[in-house]
Length: 65
Length: 488
Image 1 (cartoon, each protein chain N blue to C red):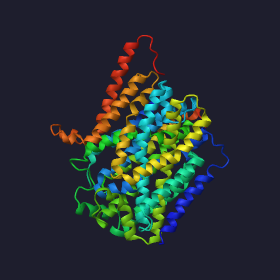
Image 2 (image 1 turned 90 degrees about the vertical axis):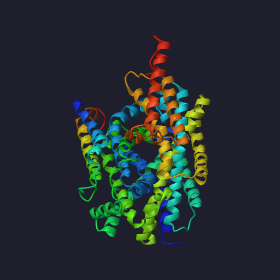
Image 3 (image 1 turned 135 degrees about the horizontal axis):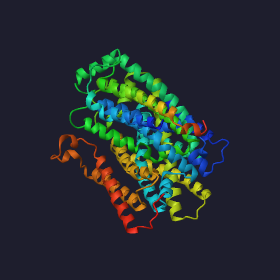
Image 4 (image 1 turned 120 degrees about the vertical axis):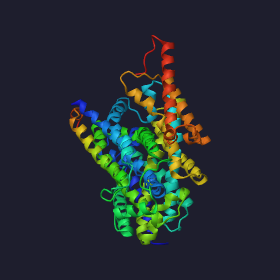
Protein backbone atom coordinates (compact mmCIF):
# COMPACT_ATOMS: atom_id res chain seq x y z
CA UNK A 1 0.00 0.00 0.00
CA UNK A 2 3.01 2.29 0.37
CA UNK A 3 3.04 2.85 -3.37
CA UNK A 4 -0.13 4.90 -2.98
CA UNK A 5 2.11 7.62 -1.56
CA UNK A 6 3.27 8.34 -5.10
CA UNK A 7 -0.13 9.94 -5.70
CA UNK A 8 1.34 12.95 -3.90
CA UNK A 9 3.27 13.81 -7.06
CA UNK A 10 0.09 14.51 -8.96
CA UNK A 11 -0.71 17.88 -7.30
CA UNK A 12 2.82 19.06 -8.16
CA UNK A 13 2.34 18.22 -11.82
CA UNK A 14 -1.12 19.78 -11.85
CA UNK A 15 -0.08 23.06 -10.23
CA UNK A 16 3.45 23.50 -11.61
CA UNK A 17 3.09 22.08 -15.13
CA UNK A 18 -0.68 22.19 -15.59
CA UNK A 19 -1.01 26.00 -15.84
CA UNK A 20 1.04 25.94 -19.07
CA UNK A 21 -1.91 24.21 -20.73
CA UNK A 22 -4.80 26.05 -19.10
CA UNK A 23 -3.69 29.68 -18.99
CA UNK A 24 -6.95 31.09 -20.32
CA UNK A 25 -9.83 33.20 -19.04
CA UNK A 26 -12.68 31.39 -20.75
CA UNK A 27 -14.80 29.38 -20.47
CA UNK A 28 -15.76 30.60 -17.02
CA UNK A 29 -16.34 27.67 -14.65
CA UNK A 30 -18.87 28.48 -11.91
CA UNK A 31 -18.07 32.11 -12.64
CA UNK A 32 -14.31 31.67 -12.29
CA UNK A 33 -11.75 32.35 -15.03
CA UNK A 34 -10.55 28.99 -16.38
CA UNK A 35 -7.04 29.16 -14.89
CA UNK A 36 -8.38 30.05 -11.44
CA UNK A 37 -11.00 27.30 -11.67
CA UNK A 38 -8.22 24.82 -12.53
CA UNK A 39 -6.23 25.79 -9.44
CA UNK A 40 -9.29 25.65 -7.20
CA UNK A 41 -10.28 22.24 -8.59
CA UNK A 42 -6.80 20.92 -7.85
CA UNK A 43 -6.89 22.20 -4.30
CA UNK A 44 -10.05 20.12 -3.77
CA UNK A 45 -8.50 17.08 -5.46
CA UNK A 46 -5.29 17.50 -3.45
CA UNK A 47 -7.23 17.36 -0.22
CA UNK A 48 -8.89 14.19 -1.45
CA UNK A 49 -5.55 12.66 -2.44
CA UNK A 50 -4.12 13.43 1.00
CA UNK A 51 -7.18 11.80 2.60
CA UNK A 52 -6.59 8.64 0.53
CA UNK A 53 -2.90 8.58 1.45
CA UNK A 54 -3.80 9.12 5.10
CA UNK A 55 -6.33 6.29 5.08
CA UNK A 56 -3.85 3.88 3.48
CA UNK A 57 -0.90 4.88 5.68
CA UNK A 58 -0.15 2.23 8.34
CA UNK A 59 1.74 4.88 10.36
CA UNK A 60 -1.57 6.41 11.39
CA UNK A 61 -2.64 3.17 13.03
CA UNK A 62 0.56 2.80 15.03
CA UNK A 63 0.21 6.20 16.67
CA UNK A 64 -2.56 7.08 19.03
CA UNK A 65 -5.66 8.24 17.18
CA UNK B 1 -15.07 58.97 18.03
CA UNK B 2 -16.86 57.21 15.21
CA UNK B 3 -18.88 54.03 14.67
CA UNK B 4 -15.88 51.94 13.72
CA UNK B 5 -13.61 52.55 16.69
CA UNK B 6 -15.48 50.57 19.39
CA UNK B 7 -15.14 47.39 17.31
CA UNK B 8 -11.45 47.89 16.67
CA UNK B 9 -10.85 48.62 20.35
CA UNK B 10 -12.88 45.54 21.30
CA UNK B 11 -10.69 43.33 19.09
CA UNK B 12 -7.54 44.63 20.73
CA UNK B 13 -9.04 44.10 24.19
CA UNK B 14 -10.27 40.62 23.28
CA UNK B 15 -6.79 39.62 22.16
CA UNK B 16 -5.34 40.92 25.41
CA UNK B 17 -7.89 39.12 27.62
CA UNK B 18 -7.73 35.81 25.73
CA UNK B 19 -3.96 36.06 25.66
CA UNK B 20 -3.80 36.43 29.45
CA UNK B 21 -6.47 33.81 30.20
CA UNK B 22 -4.57 31.24 28.12
CA UNK B 23 -2.00 30.97 30.87
CA UNK B 24 -4.44 29.55 33.42
CA UNK B 25 -3.47 26.26 35.00
CA UNK B 26 -0.07 26.14 33.31
CA UNK B 27 3.29 26.27 34.96
CA UNK B 28 5.13 28.45 32.44
CA UNK B 29 8.33 26.51 31.95
CA UNK B 30 10.24 27.01 28.72
CA UNK B 31 8.60 23.88 27.33
CA UNK B 32 5.08 25.17 28.09
CA UNK B 33 5.83 28.71 27.01
CA UNK B 34 7.42 28.01 23.66
CA UNK B 35 6.03 24.62 22.51
CA UNK B 36 2.85 24.27 24.59
CA UNK B 37 4.21 21.28 26.51
CA UNK B 38 4.04 19.35 23.20
CA UNK B 39 0.42 18.58 24.02
CA UNK B 40 -1.68 20.34 21.36
CA UNK B 41 -4.31 18.29 19.52
CA UNK B 42 -5.38 18.55 15.90
CA UNK B 43 -7.51 21.68 16.38
CA UNK B 44 -4.93 23.83 18.14
CA UNK B 45 -2.17 22.77 15.76
CA UNK B 46 -4.52 23.52 12.90
CA UNK B 47 -5.23 26.98 14.31
CA UNK B 48 -1.56 27.73 14.83
CA UNK B 49 -0.65 26.64 11.32
CA UNK B 50 -3.69 28.36 9.83
CA UNK B 51 -3.00 31.39 12.00
CA UNK B 52 0.29 31.81 10.24
CA UNK B 53 -1.33 31.65 6.83
CA UNK B 54 -4.01 34.23 7.41
CA UNK B 55 -1.84 37.14 8.31
CA UNK B 56 -2.09 40.76 7.23
CA UNK B 57 -0.18 39.59 4.19
CA UNK B 58 -3.10 37.52 2.98
CA UNK B 59 -5.75 39.95 4.16
CA UNK B 60 -4.23 43.12 2.69
CA UNK B 61 -1.50 41.77 0.40
CA UNK B 62 -3.64 39.02 -1.13
CA UNK B 63 -6.49 41.31 -2.04
CA UNK B 64 -4.04 44.03 -3.04
CA UNK B 65 -2.16 41.68 -5.35
CA UNK B 66 -5.38 40.55 -7.06
CA UNK B 67 -6.40 44.20 -7.34
CA UNK B 68 -3.11 45.45 -8.73
CA UNK B 69 -1.82 42.51 -10.78
CA UNK B 70 -4.68 40.08 -11.30
CA UNK B 71 -3.83 36.45 -12.07
CA UNK B 72 -0.29 36.41 -10.61
CA UNK B 73 -2.04 36.49 -7.21
CA UNK B 74 -3.16 32.91 -7.81
CA UNK B 75 0.32 31.76 -6.88
CA UNK B 76 -0.58 32.28 -3.22
CA UNK B 77 -3.29 29.59 -3.49
CA UNK B 78 -1.02 27.13 -5.27
CA UNK B 79 2.10 27.26 -3.11
CA UNK B 80 0.29 26.62 0.16
CA UNK B 81 -1.38 23.56 -1.29
CA UNK B 82 1.91 22.04 -2.38
CA UNK B 83 3.51 22.92 0.95
CA UNK B 84 0.80 20.92 2.73
CA UNK B 85 1.45 17.90 0.51
CA UNK B 86 5.14 18.09 1.44
CA UNK B 87 4.22 18.54 5.09
CA UNK B 88 2.59 15.12 5.24
CA UNK B 89 5.92 13.42 4.62
CA UNK B 90 8.39 15.94 5.94
CA UNK B 91 6.91 17.07 9.24
CA UNK B 92 6.27 13.82 11.16
CA UNK B 93 9.99 12.85 11.24
CA UNK B 94 10.86 16.40 12.31
CA UNK B 95 8.24 16.25 15.07
CA UNK B 96 9.45 12.86 16.32
CA UNK B 97 13.07 13.94 16.39
CA UNK B 98 12.17 17.17 18.21
CA UNK B 99 10.21 15.27 20.83
CA UNK B 100 12.92 12.68 21.43
CA UNK B 101 15.57 15.35 21.86
CA UNK B 102 13.38 17.92 23.63
CA UNK B 103 14.03 20.63 21.06
CA UNK B 104 12.54 24.12 21.40
CA UNK B 105 13.46 25.88 18.20
CA UNK B 106 14.30 25.30 14.56
CA UNK B 107 17.91 26.14 15.31
CA UNK B 108 17.98 23.33 17.94
CA UNK B 109 17.09 20.91 15.18
CA UNK B 110 20.22 21.78 13.23
CA UNK B 111 22.35 21.77 16.39
CA UNK B 112 21.33 18.20 17.14
CA UNK B 113 21.19 16.75 13.62
CA UNK B 114 24.58 18.13 12.70
CA UNK B 115 26.00 18.04 16.23
CA UNK B 116 27.15 21.63 15.86
CA UNK B 117 26.15 24.55 18.10
CA UNK B 118 27.90 26.85 15.61
CA UNK B 119 25.53 25.78 12.84
CA UNK B 120 22.71 26.48 15.29
CA UNK B 121 23.97 30.03 15.75
CA UNK B 122 24.09 30.51 11.98
CA UNK B 123 20.54 29.22 11.55
CA UNK B 124 19.31 31.37 14.44
CA UNK B 125 20.82 34.46 12.85
CA UNK B 126 19.24 33.71 9.45
CA UNK B 127 15.93 33.12 11.23
CA UNK B 128 16.03 36.35 13.17
CA UNK B 129 17.01 38.40 10.14
CA UNK B 130 14.01 36.94 8.28
CA UNK B 131 11.60 37.21 11.20
CA UNK B 132 12.10 40.89 11.88
CA UNK B 133 10.75 42.01 8.44
CA UNK B 134 7.88 39.59 8.91
CA UNK B 135 7.03 41.20 12.22
CA UNK B 136 7.49 44.65 10.71
CA UNK B 137 5.05 43.58 8.04
CA UNK B 138 2.40 42.72 10.63
CA UNK B 139 2.86 46.02 12.45
CA UNK B 140 2.80 47.96 9.21
CA UNK B 141 -0.43 46.21 8.24
CA UNK B 142 -1.88 46.93 11.65
CA UNK B 143 -1.14 50.64 11.24
CA UNK B 144 -2.77 50.73 7.81
CA UNK B 145 -5.86 48.86 9.00
CA UNK B 146 -6.51 50.97 12.07
CA UNK B 147 -5.88 54.16 10.12
CA UNK B 148 -8.26 53.37 7.26
CA UNK B 149 -10.93 51.42 9.17
CA UNK B 150 -10.89 53.99 11.98
CA UNK B 151 -11.42 56.81 9.45
CA UNK B 152 -8.16 58.40 10.51
CA UNK B 153 -9.17 58.86 14.16
CA UNK B 154 -6.11 56.96 15.38
CA UNK B 155 -2.78 57.55 13.69
CA UNK B 156 -0.87 54.53 12.35
CA UNK B 157 1.98 55.33 14.72
CA UNK B 158 -0.26 55.20 17.79
CA UNK B 159 -1.94 52.03 16.53
CA UNK B 160 1.43 50.34 16.03
CA UNK B 161 2.56 51.23 19.54
CA UNK B 162 -0.67 49.98 21.11
CA UNK B 163 -0.58 46.78 19.06
CA UNK B 164 3.05 46.09 19.92
CA UNK B 165 2.41 46.60 23.65
CA UNK B 166 -0.60 44.24 23.64
CA UNK B 167 1.24 41.49 21.79
CA UNK B 168 4.37 41.79 23.88
CA UNK B 169 2.30 41.67 27.08
CA UNK B 170 0.40 38.52 26.32
CA UNK B 171 3.34 36.73 24.78
CA UNK B 172 5.37 37.35 27.94
CA UNK B 173 2.59 35.97 30.09
CA UNK B 174 1.24 33.04 28.07
CA UNK B 175 3.66 32.26 25.25
CA UNK B 176 2.32 29.94 22.57
CA UNK B 177 -0.83 29.27 24.60
CA UNK B 178 -1.75 32.94 24.11
CA UNK B 179 -1.26 32.62 20.35
CA UNK B 180 -3.44 29.51 20.21
CA UNK B 181 -6.29 31.08 22.17
CA UNK B 182 -6.32 34.34 20.24
CA UNK B 183 -6.24 32.27 17.04
CA UNK B 184 -9.68 30.92 17.92
CA UNK B 185 -11.16 34.42 17.91
CA UNK B 186 -9.24 35.46 14.82
CA UNK B 187 -10.09 32.47 12.68
CA UNK B 188 -13.81 32.54 13.47
CA UNK B 189 -13.95 36.24 12.62
CA UNK B 190 -11.90 36.01 9.46
CA UNK B 191 -13.85 33.02 8.20
CA UNK B 192 -17.14 34.89 8.54
CA UNK B 193 -15.94 38.26 7.30
CA UNK B 194 -13.89 37.16 4.30
CA UNK B 195 -16.50 34.76 2.96
CA UNK B 196 -19.19 37.39 3.36
CA UNK B 197 -17.14 40.10 1.62
CA UNK B 198 -16.03 37.74 -1.14
CA UNK B 199 -19.60 36.80 -1.98
CA UNK B 200 -21.37 40.08 -1.27
CA UNK B 201 -19.08 42.53 -3.07
CA UNK B 202 -19.09 40.79 -6.49
CA UNK B 203 -22.89 40.47 -6.33
CA UNK B 204 -23.41 43.99 -5.10
CA UNK B 205 -21.28 45.63 -7.77
CA UNK B 206 -21.50 43.24 -10.72
CA UNK B 207 -24.49 40.95 -10.10
CA UNK B 208 -22.33 37.86 -9.70
CA UNK B 209 -18.90 36.29 -10.01
CA UNK B 210 -19.22 35.42 -13.69
CA UNK B 211 -20.32 38.91 -14.67
CA UNK B 212 -17.58 40.42 -12.52
CA UNK B 213 -14.83 38.45 -14.26
CA UNK B 214 -16.39 39.13 -17.66
CA UNK B 215 -16.46 42.86 -16.89
CA UNK B 216 -12.84 42.78 -15.75
CA UNK B 217 -11.70 40.91 -18.86
CA UNK B 218 -13.52 43.47 -21.00
CA UNK B 219 -11.97 46.45 -19.24
CA UNK B 220 -8.52 44.89 -18.85
CA UNK B 221 -8.00 42.05 -21.34
CA UNK B 222 -5.68 39.35 -20.00
CA UNK B 223 -6.01 40.50 -16.37
CA UNK B 224 -7.35 37.14 -15.15
CA UNK B 225 -4.70 35.05 -16.91
CA UNK B 226 -0.93 35.06 -16.55
CA UNK B 227 0.77 37.53 -18.91
CA UNK B 228 3.16 36.30 -21.64
CA UNK B 229 6.11 38.17 -20.08
CA UNK B 230 7.08 39.31 -16.62
CA UNK B 231 4.88 37.47 -14.15
CA UNK B 232 4.38 34.75 -16.72
CA UNK B 233 3.84 31.00 -16.51
CA UNK B 234 7.57 30.52 -15.91
CA UNK B 235 7.50 33.03 -13.10
CA UNK B 236 4.42 31.34 -11.66
CA UNK B 237 5.83 27.81 -11.59
CA UNK B 238 9.23 28.78 -10.25
CA UNK B 239 7.73 31.01 -7.57
CA UNK B 240 5.17 28.42 -6.49
CA UNK B 241 7.89 25.78 -6.19
CA UNK B 242 10.28 28.01 -4.25
CA UNK B 243 7.67 29.29 -1.82
CA UNK B 244 6.26 25.79 -1.28
CA UNK B 245 9.73 24.58 -0.26
CA UNK B 246 10.27 27.59 2.00
CA UNK B 247 6.83 27.45 3.62
CA UNK B 248 7.70 25.32 6.65
CA UNK B 249 11.19 26.78 6.92
CA UNK B 250 9.79 29.83 8.68
CA UNK B 251 11.03 29.31 12.23
CA UNK B 252 7.69 30.13 13.83
CA UNK B 253 5.87 27.70 11.53
CA UNK B 254 8.55 25.10 12.15
CA UNK B 255 8.15 25.68 15.87
CA UNK B 256 4.40 25.14 15.79
CA UNK B 257 5.04 21.58 14.59
CA UNK B 258 6.68 20.93 17.97
CA UNK B 259 3.44 21.75 19.79
CA UNK B 260 1.68 18.70 18.29
CA UNK B 261 0.70 15.85 20.59
CA UNK B 262 1.34 13.19 17.93
CA UNK B 263 2.47 12.78 14.34
CA UNK B 264 -1.06 11.82 13.35
CA UNK B 265 -2.22 15.30 14.36
CA UNK B 266 0.17 16.70 11.76
CA UNK B 267 -0.88 14.29 9.00
CA UNK B 268 -4.55 15.06 9.59
CA UNK B 269 -3.78 18.71 9.07
CA UNK B 270 -2.32 17.97 5.65
CA UNK B 271 -5.81 16.92 4.55
CA UNK B 272 -7.71 19.86 5.98
CA UNK B 273 -5.34 22.78 5.39
CA UNK B 274 -5.59 22.75 1.56
CA UNK B 275 -9.33 23.20 1.88
CA UNK B 276 -8.93 25.97 4.41
CA UNK B 277 -6.69 27.72 1.90
CA UNK B 278 -9.74 28.29 -0.22
CA UNK B 279 -10.69 31.20 2.02
CA UNK B 280 -8.02 33.03 0.08
CA UNK B 281 -10.22 32.70 -2.95
CA UNK B 282 -12.71 35.04 -1.30
CA UNK B 283 -9.92 37.46 -0.48
CA UNK B 284 -9.09 37.50 -4.20
CA UNK B 285 -12.74 38.14 -5.08
CA UNK B 286 -12.62 41.26 -2.92
CA UNK B 287 -9.48 42.42 -4.70
CA UNK B 288 -10.95 41.73 -8.13
CA UNK B 289 -14.19 43.52 -7.19
CA UNK B 290 -12.12 46.53 -6.18
CA UNK B 291 -10.19 46.74 -9.50
CA UNK B 292 -12.99 48.48 -11.33
CA UNK B 293 -14.66 50.10 -8.30
CA UNK B 294 -11.80 51.91 -6.58
CA UNK B 295 -9.27 52.22 -9.40
CA UNK B 296 -6.13 54.31 -9.23
CA UNK B 297 -4.26 52.78 -6.27
CA UNK B 298 -0.65 52.13 -7.28
CA UNK B 299 2.64 51.13 -5.70
CA UNK B 300 2.38 50.09 -2.08
CA UNK B 301 -1.12 51.58 -1.90
CA UNK B 302 -2.58 48.52 -3.65
CA UNK B 303 -2.61 46.97 -0.18
CA UNK B 304 -5.41 49.39 0.71
CA UNK B 305 -7.81 48.00 -1.91
CA UNK B 306 -9.89 45.90 0.50
CA UNK B 307 -10.45 48.73 2.94
CA UNK B 308 -11.02 51.42 0.33
CA UNK B 309 -13.78 49.32 -1.18
CA UNK B 310 -15.23 48.51 2.25
CA UNK B 311 -15.34 52.16 3.25
CA UNK B 312 -17.07 52.95 -0.04
CA UNK B 313 -19.64 50.17 0.44
CA UNK B 314 -20.50 49.81 4.12
CA UNK B 315 -21.56 51.80 7.20
CA UNK B 316 -18.77 52.77 9.58
CA UNK B 317 -19.74 50.18 12.21
CA UNK B 318 -19.28 47.36 9.70
CA UNK B 319 -16.00 48.79 8.49
CA UNK B 320 -15.11 48.65 12.18
CA UNK B 321 -15.88 44.92 12.29
CA UNK B 322 -13.67 44.35 9.24
CA UNK B 323 -10.99 46.46 10.88
CA UNK B 324 -11.30 44.39 14.06
CA UNK B 325 -10.69 41.24 12.01
CA UNK B 326 -7.72 42.89 10.39
CA UNK B 327 -6.25 43.83 13.76
CA UNK B 328 -6.39 40.18 14.85
CA UNK B 329 -4.73 39.03 11.61
CA UNK B 330 -1.80 41.21 12.63
CA UNK B 331 -1.67 40.39 16.34
CA UNK B 332 -1.86 36.59 16.21
CA UNK B 333 0.98 35.93 13.75
CA UNK B 334 2.83 38.81 15.41
CA UNK B 335 2.70 36.95 18.70
CA UNK B 336 4.10 33.74 17.16
CA UNK B 337 6.93 35.62 15.51
CA UNK B 338 7.77 37.56 18.64
CA UNK B 339 7.89 34.43 20.77
CA UNK B 340 10.00 32.57 18.21
CA UNK B 341 12.50 35.39 17.85
CA UNK B 342 12.87 35.73 21.62
CA UNK B 343 13.31 31.96 22.03
CA UNK B 344 15.96 31.90 19.30
CA UNK B 345 17.98 34.68 20.87
CA UNK B 346 17.83 33.21 24.37
CA UNK B 347 18.04 29.52 23.54
CA UNK B 348 20.36 29.52 20.56
CA UNK B 349 22.46 32.67 20.73
CA UNK B 350 22.80 33.25 24.48
CA UNK B 351 23.07 29.54 25.32
CA UNK B 352 25.79 29.12 22.69
CA UNK B 353 27.84 31.78 24.46
CA UNK B 354 26.98 30.56 27.94
CA UNK B 355 26.40 26.76 27.71
CA UNK B 356 26.00 26.40 31.49
CA UNK B 357 22.71 28.37 31.51
CA UNK B 358 19.79 26.22 32.69
CA UNK B 359 16.29 26.11 31.23
CA UNK B 360 14.91 28.41 33.90
CA UNK B 361 17.42 31.14 33.11
CA UNK B 362 16.81 30.75 29.38
CA UNK B 363 13.08 30.96 29.95
CA UNK B 364 13.42 34.15 32.01
CA UNK B 365 15.72 35.73 29.43
CA UNK B 366 13.37 34.85 26.55
CA UNK B 367 10.48 36.60 28.28
CA UNK B 368 12.57 39.69 28.96
CA UNK B 369 13.60 39.75 25.30
CA UNK B 370 9.99 39.84 24.07
CA UNK B 371 9.42 43.58 24.62
CA UNK B 372 12.90 44.35 23.28
CA UNK B 373 12.30 42.51 20.01
CA UNK B 374 8.91 44.23 19.74
CA UNK B 375 10.64 47.57 20.20
CA UNK B 376 13.14 46.85 17.42
CA UNK B 377 10.29 45.89 15.08
CA UNK B 378 8.35 49.06 15.93
CA UNK B 379 11.45 51.08 15.18
CA UNK B 380 11.83 49.53 11.71
CA UNK B 381 8.10 49.83 11.06
CA UNK B 382 8.07 53.55 11.73
CA UNK B 383 11.28 54.14 9.80
CA UNK B 384 11.00 51.86 6.77
CA UNK B 385 9.30 52.10 3.37
CA UNK B 386 8.75 49.22 0.90
CA UNK B 387 5.54 47.42 0.10
CA UNK B 388 4.25 44.49 2.09
CA UNK B 389 4.89 41.84 -0.53
CA UNK B 390 8.44 42.96 -1.30
CA UNK B 391 9.45 42.79 2.35
CA UNK B 392 8.05 39.34 2.80
CA UNK B 393 9.68 37.93 -0.31
CA UNK B 394 13.16 38.80 0.94
CA UNK B 395 12.59 37.05 4.27
CA UNK B 396 11.09 34.14 2.40
CA UNK B 397 14.20 33.74 0.25
CA UNK B 398 16.35 33.72 3.38
CA UNK B 399 14.54 30.94 5.21
CA UNK B 400 14.21 28.88 2.02
CA UNK B 401 17.99 28.50 2.13
CA UNK B 402 17.58 26.23 5.16
CA UNK B 403 15.62 23.70 3.12
CA UNK B 404 18.45 21.63 1.53
CA UNK B 405 20.38 21.05 4.76
CA UNK B 406 17.16 20.23 6.59
CA UNK B 407 15.78 17.76 4.08
CA UNK B 408 19.10 15.96 3.69
CA UNK B 409 19.32 15.58 7.46
CA UNK B 410 16.07 13.60 7.44
CA UNK B 411 17.61 10.86 5.29
CA UNK B 412 18.92 7.75 7.01
CA UNK B 413 22.41 8.53 5.74
CA UNK B 414 22.95 12.27 5.53
CA UNK B 415 25.26 13.20 2.67
CA UNK B 416 25.73 16.71 4.09
CA UNK B 417 28.36 17.42 6.71
CA UNK B 418 28.07 20.30 9.16
CA UNK B 419 30.62 22.28 7.17
CA UNK B 420 28.71 21.63 3.95
CA UNK B 421 25.40 22.64 5.52
CA UNK B 422 26.86 25.86 6.89
CA UNK B 423 28.66 26.75 3.66
CA UNK B 424 25.51 26.08 1.62
CA UNK B 425 23.35 28.26 3.85
CA UNK B 426 25.90 31.08 3.85
CA UNK B 427 26.31 30.93 0.05
CA UNK B 428 22.54 30.89 -0.49
CA UNK B 429 21.84 33.77 1.87
CA UNK B 430 24.71 35.78 0.40
CA UNK B 431 23.27 35.26 -3.08
CA UNK B 432 19.83 36.42 -1.96
CA UNK B 433 21.33 39.49 -0.30
CA UNK B 434 23.50 40.33 -3.32
CA UNK B 435 20.57 39.97 -5.67
CA UNK B 436 18.23 42.04 -3.50
CA UNK B 437 20.76 44.80 -2.95
CA UNK B 438 21.88 45.13 -6.56
CA UNK B 439 18.41 44.60 -8.05
CA UNK B 440 19.74 42.04 -10.51
CA UNK B 441 17.25 39.60 -11.98
CA UNK B 442 17.22 37.41 -15.03
CA UNK B 443 15.55 40.17 -17.00
CA UNK B 444 18.63 42.34 -16.76
CA UNK B 445 20.55 39.55 -18.47
CA UNK B 446 18.97 40.07 -21.85
CA UNK B 447 21.03 37.38 -23.63
CA UNK B 448 19.07 34.69 -21.80
CA UNK B 449 16.04 32.98 -23.38
CA UNK B 450 12.80 34.73 -22.52
CA UNK B 451 11.50 31.84 -20.37
CA UNK B 452 14.56 31.90 -18.16
CA UNK B 453 14.34 35.66 -17.80
CA UNK B 454 11.00 35.25 -16.07
CA UNK B 455 12.18 32.65 -13.55
CA UNK B 456 12.18 33.61 -9.91
CA UNK B 457 15.72 34.68 -9.11
CA UNK B 458 15.48 32.73 -5.81
CA UNK B 459 16.09 29.56 -7.85
CA UNK B 460 19.66 30.72 -8.37
CA UNK B 461 20.29 31.19 -4.66
CA UNK B 462 18.94 27.73 -3.94
CA UNK B 463 21.04 26.19 -6.72
CA UNK B 464 24.20 27.92 -5.46
CA UNK B 465 23.34 26.68 -1.98
CA UNK B 466 22.97 23.05 -3.08
CA UNK B 467 26.13 23.05 -5.19
CA UNK B 468 28.24 24.55 -2.41
CA UNK B 469 26.70 22.18 0.13
CA UNK B 470 27.56 19.11 -1.93
CA UNK B 471 31.05 20.22 -2.92
CA UNK B 472 32.06 21.19 0.62
CA UNK B 473 30.48 18.05 2.12
CA UNK B 474 32.27 15.74 -0.29
CA UNK B 475 35.56 17.55 0.21
CA UNK B 476 35.27 17.30 3.98
CA UNK B 477 34.46 13.61 3.77
CA UNK B 478 37.46 12.94 1.52
CA UNK B 479 39.76 14.89 3.80
CA UNK B 480 38.48 13.19 6.92
CA UNK B 481 38.07 9.72 5.41
CA UNK B 482 37.82 7.03 6.43
CA UNK B 483 37.15 7.68 10.12
CA UNK B 484 34.74 10.57 9.72
CA UNK B 485 31.39 9.64 11.22
CA UNK B 486 28.46 10.97 9.24
CA UNK B 487 26.42 13.59 11.05
CA UNK B 488 23.50 11.38 12.02
